[in-house]
Length: 165
Image (cartoon, rainbow, N blue to C red; front, side, top):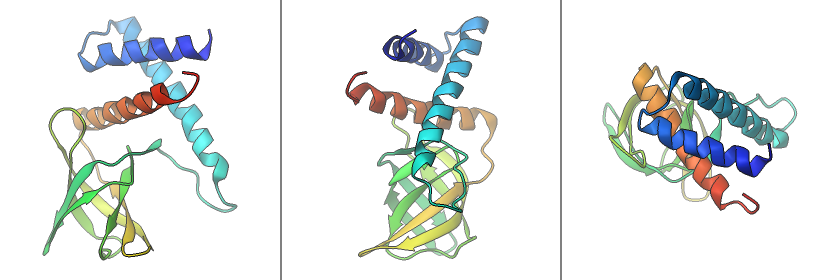
């Protein structure tokens, strides 16, 4: 099967899955295709890795989404640089301490916001701001699936705009 047909079929399954309309066989096919695409894109994202740099564990997509991070004495509205099922990064005026645990309220493109604990895992100073990386804490099953589906919405939309798809 050619790539264009494979992606078209995956998009159709994805739309059906979002509305709970997959049969058991379609569900298995959808999860298999989604996993296959994620592994391929994750491998491609790892091609520019520097020697000694750890491999990514989650598919990441560059996308600006609104997120509010809150904790003791802190409440800030941010816009993400990128997002994955493992976390996100966003610019901040000043970085919280590495290891600090906050609550993030992420506005997904469709549906209710996702509220989850996040941990500051790193920061990189930039011009006028600091790029702060956050890792999601435990996310309950239904919310984790919601996040994964939202990320695949973004991935499939981006692939649809790519030349030759």
